[in-house]
Structure formats: structure tokens, C-alpha cells
Image 1 (cartoon, helix red, strand yellow):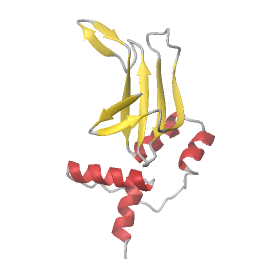
Image 2 (image 1 turned 60 degrees about the vertical axis):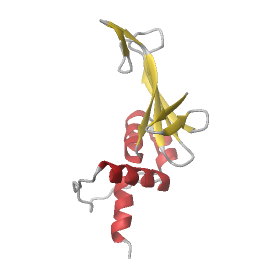
Image 3 (image 1 turned 135 degrees about the vertical axis):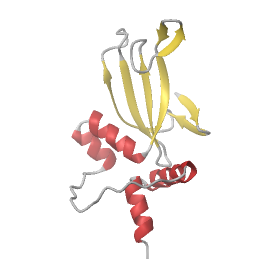
Image 4 (image 1 turned 90 degrees about the vertical axis):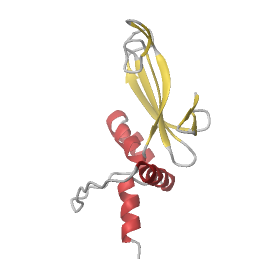
Length: 142
């Protein structure tokens, strides 16, 4: 599947498939399947499809729905969280490495304008790191 979202091309034919997960089979109206991909530039996205009673249904009229297929861009952190919830440990480690257990971090809320936030997400994805790690690298540069 190929789609353009926010002026960015996402193409399953040229991206690397990391893994997938879903529910049931295509003859079930509640069926859905999601596949996580990584582009050559480090960006992540889901290619998702589902039946007329799935979370990927689309309205086709009054009280009518149909199945659909869509592309969902993801940040590195979103992709990592999706993989943690939907892939087995070996596939997760192959894609994102072994998670480190770390108790010396503090959660901080920061407010950016949308353009800055989008740029940070793109730069972090290109570097293959979380947004947290990207910002920490910027702040601790000497």
C-alpha cells in the first residue's frame, strides 16, 4: 500500500516490515490486522486494515460501514510502544534492541509549538532514538 500523509510518502513496498498482529480472519466483520514498518529514513508507520465492525471501519452511509485499509504515521516512541504490546520479545529486541531498566530518569512535561514538535519527532526518528533521548542529547551537549 502507498499513501501520502502530511505531505510524506509511506509505501509498504519500500519499507521494512517489523511485524504484525491482529484479530480473527478477513471473513469476520470485526477482523483487523496491523503491520509495523520502518522507512529507510527511520520513520515508522502502521499499515492497518479491518472489517466493517473493526476499529478501521469507515462510514459509507446512514448506519452503514465498510472495511478499509489505512496508513498511520508513528513516532519512534509510538512504534516502540506498539511493538511492545503486539510483538513477541524476540521481534521487539530485533527491532528496538534490549530495553534498559533505568530508575534515574524523571518524567517532565514540556510544551512545544506543533512545528517544533514535528521537527523533533522527525529528527529523533532519523536518528533512530526516542524523542526523550533526542532532547536529552541536545540539552547535555557541551
